[in-house]
Length: 493
Image (tube, rainbow, N blue to C red):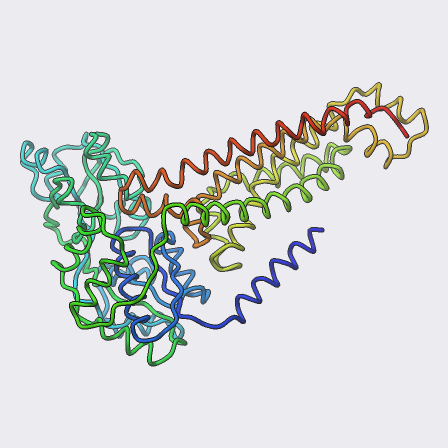
């Protein structure tokens, strides 16, 4: 059965590969990236190209790996990020031609869009005035100020570790999702965070950017990064954006998304109409349409992964329960999967399975195995040894013992393991939106980018309700199926 499942997944992957080839536009999971990617997608559509949007992917690692794996064809990157995070070069910088040469034959950078969205350090305006903090160097006088930085910034060459060395800083630092950092400053949970110089939320939350007096951060010129195998016409179209967006224009568009709550496609179409481009025809989806679509996708991801996990977990449990050594190995390997952070496991799937549903299903399958295997082994082992001897004495074969006695008696524990796996899958599946798998995580990711609590709740609340429904259905299953099995557990006929 497992072979059939893998065959189905590989066939689906093949069908996707041989389908018609629209230009696949990706974006990272922050406000500006959504806006710019929508501008790219709308511009291509206005020129007659078919476009597939794969927005809200994780950070640089996820997007760039998706580009290398030919899962997306273009997204907007920044020259400083290319140098520091992708090419691992010093902050002295490289020209566009040098970076293109280092990127290889498959990937290229197109001319910059015109603005420089450098990294920056932001702090509350009133706090900065009270403490006379104007530069990053000034932070050295206040080591007790708590800082919260995005996880990517905490691990980049041009991020916190080298910034702290350059400026001699020793603040207490925590990792936080970028979309939540400004709200955390407003609430007083943190005092300092990383920001983007064109961020529209800076004005909304009354933050100021500290002067980078030691010139630590390199330039971050926004550039389309593309696969070279897209058509020359598409490349020519994308090159029309060269120098069209200055710093003020980008800040204005970010503010429209963050403060005025305009949709990304509306902002993109307004920008393109200023430059005389054809507005794209689109159809808005209602709240209920989005909810139904995301819920169906969420159920699809979790049900396929859980079904595979049940078959695999039960087979492993039945095979290993009678041997202490084998069961120890099986449980160890299953537990190993649980130690890998969800978003890291999803990112590791990209080079193998690309982005979308398949890597999400595989990751959810791996996470569902442990509770099913563990509870199956525990349930079978917890049966009274005297009862096991009785069924042997009355002449039942090993197969009859397992199917007619042991499994029915262990069923409460097994069902509990499956229930746990189902709830874990529903929760973890919300992270699948970071690799373009959709589901109820999609509004959560978009809400984080916009710092929109209502949008976050549009994903979080249905996911919680879905988990409660699953809990109820399993309780119903126990009442309707489990008790009859228990009554017949000792009946060898």
